[in-house]
Image (tube, rainbow, N blue to C red):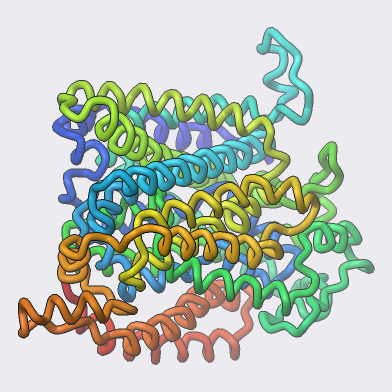
Length: 607
C-alpha cells in the first residue's frame, strides 16, 4: 500500500498550516524575549501540558518503543524507565512548583536564585549551558535519524534518486530525508517562537489522537480469532532475574537484538534503571523543552497541574499506537521488509507496518501526526537551545543591553546554527537506540548528582555545582571510549560516584553560599530537605514562617503516582490484546489511586 492523494493532501494541508501559523504569529513572538521564548508566561496550563506531551511523543522514541514492544512484549513497559518516564510524577507532586517559584527564563538563569551572582556562579552557569546544549544536540540528532528512517519507507529512494544530481549511499538515505524535513521544521519554530510551537503541538496532538485510536481499533479487529505467535512470557509484564523470552523458534533475529541491547539480565537491568531513575527524578528536570514549559506556566500551581496532565494525555494514546502496530506486525511478520545493511532493523517496524496495514485516510492522518511529532519535538528542543545560547550567553556575557530587535535576530541566527550542527552530528549516529542510550545512560548520569544536591542540601554551593557537573560531563564524554560495547546504564554507578565526589569536594573547598541568598531562596521556593541552619535563621526573623513539612506526603504521592502512570501505560495494551481480567484489575487500581490523589494532591495544590 502506498500514500494516496488523500493521504498526501492531509500531509500538505498540515505542512501549509504550520507555515501559516509561524508566519501569522511572528509579530507576537517579536514583542520581547519572554514572549518569544516562553509565550509571555500567559498560556493556560492544559495547553502547555498538551504541548509538552506532544514534544515527548517523538517519532524516534515511538519507533524505538514499537521495536521494544515487538520483541519484549508487555515487559517493554519498564524499559522507558531509562529516561526515566516517572520523573514526570516527581515533577507533578512537588518539583514543578519549586522550579516555577524562581521566575527564571532558563535552568541556567535559575542558578542565580540558588547560589547568588558571584564569580563562581558564572562557572556553574556555563556548565549548565554546556550540558543543555549537549543534550539538545543529542536529541536533535536522535530525532533527525529517526525521521530519516521513517520517511525512507514511505518515499522509496528509488523514486527520488533520478531527481538528485549526485549518488547517495544507502546508509545515508535517511539522512537526506532528515535534512529536508528538518529545514522545514526550522521555519515555523524559529519564526513563531513559543506561541507557534504550542499551537502547532495542539493541532498535531488532535491528529495523532484520532489516528492512534483508529490503529488500536484496527488491531483489535485483526487480532480477533488469530492468536499471536510469540514466546512464552511475552504477555506477562512481570519478570525474574532473567528476561526469559526465547524467540529462536519464531524469529531468531529477535534473540540477536536482545543480546545486542544487553537487557537479558532483566532483574539487574531493572534495578539499575530504578536506582538511576529515582536519583534522576530527585534532581529535577534536565534543561530542555520540559523545563522550558514548566517555567512558561502562569503560576507554581499551574506548573504542577501541567506536568500531571502530561502523563494523562500522552501515555494511553501513545501506547494504543505502539501495541496496535506491534499486533499488526506480529500477525503479518512475513510481509514486512526489515532488512538493512546491518541486518534486521526492528526500528523499521513502525513505518513498515503503517504502510502495509493501515488504510488510506487513516494512513495520511498517522503519517501527518508522526511527521508533526518530529516537528514538535524538534521545535521544542530547538527553542530550549535558543534560550540557552541567547539568554545565557549572548545577553549575559556579550550584550547585556541588547534591544528586542537584536535579541530576535540572534534567536534566528542561533536557531539556524543549531540546526546545521545537529544535522552534521546526525551523520555520525549509528541508530536511534545508540544515541538514546548515550543520552539517558551517560550524559544524564553526569547531570544527576549536582542537580540533586542543589534542592535538598543548604551547604551545597556554586563551586560544588560546577565541579559536580564538570566531572560528570567529562566522564560521560570519555566513558563511551573506555567502556566501548557496554550498555551505558551499567557504567552509571561509577559515573554517579565521580560526580558525587566532584560535588562534595568542590563544595568544601569553597565557602558557603551567602546566607542572604540562601534565606531568600528558602523562603520563596520552600523546599524540604537538609535546610535546618537556614530555617532557624529565617524563623528568627519571622517566627510565623512555617517550613515545608510535606516530605512524607510528597513521597507517598510519588509512589502511588508511579503506579498510576504504569496503569495508564498498560491499560491500552490490555485493551487491544483483549486481556479482560488484567484490564479490569488495572482499571480498578487506577480508579482507586485517582480518588486518593484527589484528596492528597489536587486538593492541596499551592502556589
